Image (tube, rainbow, N blue to C red; front, side):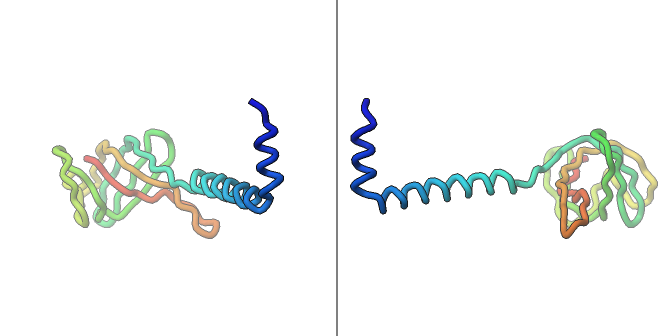
Length: 121
């Protein structure tokens, strides 16, 4: 297949060619931005200590995370509970137990932390 017919089309339609190239570059830039700005949710095992006002967890993958106990959590049969304290992390601690926790890294104006999204007892 010869490239000459394509070059002839490009020479006859420079405005359309520029528009087409611009659209392709905009698509590539948008895709690159979207791929680079995705938030990665991490789910891992942790050992948590429960206290009256908060919960502190040591992540099995290293590091730690703390959160107030009013969080979305699931119980054994995968029932989602919102806005209450998980029964596995009662306030009369310190109670230490393994849980599965989902979190994301947050970076806001140079301050970063791990934000708990979900606790699975």
